[in-house]
Length: 195
Image (cartoon, rainbow, N blue to C red):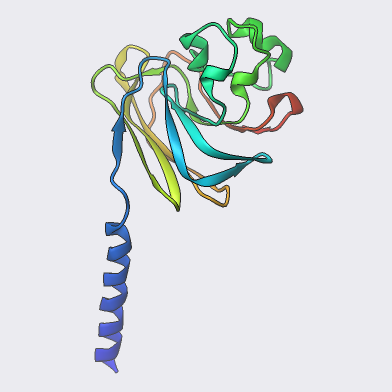
């Protein structure tokens, strides 16, 4: 009986290792200051009543589902959700255009996941990665600096799943001069957010 248990355990461990070997490789992506990169999904992601097949990873610690190029505004600074976080409880939705330098009615903050929204930049020490397949999509910010402070490094990631689950993971957080927001946001004008 002991041999059977040993063989069963070894078989189980071998099968578990096969699934980890099958994970897709992490892919490094380049994101400029206040920029983003489009990340197509290999599944349909349900989020606040909508279904998405593509996403956008922002340098400033945000994953969005609305195409930044199709949102009216004042250019890359606002398109990249720059530069401080947003205080949902102390700024009215209608005030967001004036507060954030554009007359866009706040739509840039609709349908986003904010694992660590603040002013972040890769100044040579950090890396942005993505990893995914039909079962998950992960976004990684590794050793990303607070805006031009190479001593304040941030490492965190977020994973989304086909059933709509979201997982945040934080390894190192260090922001000294900017505010930070952690939130999940649907239609902000309808008050759909969790902070």
